[in-house]
Image (cartoon, rainbow, N blue to C red):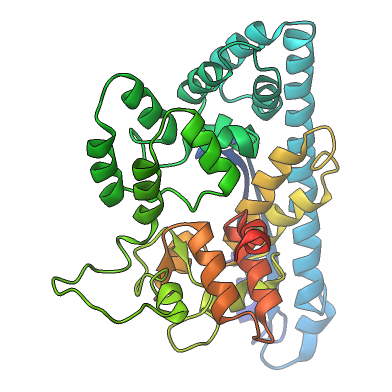
Length: 380
């Protein structure tokens, strides 16, 4: 409350306008791998006026509240953008000075010493593409243990070895089999502890070539449907229909990792509607500060430029989650889910492909779960 204005307001018998300030705080953050790399704070206020006996408040300041909101938004956006550009320039200068001319092992050591670097993705990409001719798999294993984000930079062919739960990834099974562990025992373990994936014919050939038995590979494939299809104690002689196979991909609650864009009633989940209506962005409203933070990213030219597509995807993914209400809201407004993207793609393609809103829903879901569109394209 502006007390000076308020006293004049009382003294003039409510003819002169009284004013008060509405405060806004805005924060912009850049995150990667669950860590905050950069944060910018900005604040501002919008002054409002009120009078009782005369329209004097209309002649002070801006008449339209939207104009005041836009001015505040632009101001905070400009401050975020300036701070962000300064940080990016400083990060790039350090990166260029300290990494230029270094060989791949020196780059890796630099990343170990500077794990929060904005340009970590560039080095991880270099590590993934400059593999030694000998012991390529060992190189990947070592880098995965050092940098969990390294997996995102592997080719589809190399990523195959890291499919599966921790401790029982494909490469762990290969090492265990080579170490003398019975593959029958491994098969019994993985069938209840997956999921893995439905391997292509070429992938199966590669797994066989690495020393894994057909029984073990079959158990890995069967693990995809174990949790969603309860095992009956009574054997059934009725054939399983394609519809039953598709239904088995779905978890009838929100306990899975990937939420179904549709609810059990066959309508779009609230988080999907929210994302579609927002068009994966924010709108000016009472949360002017949040809007400023988001728009600052939209206007910074480095995203998609020298920062690289990987960081751009990280930023876009975070913005999409925010526009959909946050991961907690996404889970709360979903009543069906899936264990992996392949199951999700197969189910959506079989059940919802003919829906008029299929494309919009899939685009919204792909922004939250990157790779869904690719899985849809390859699903049978």
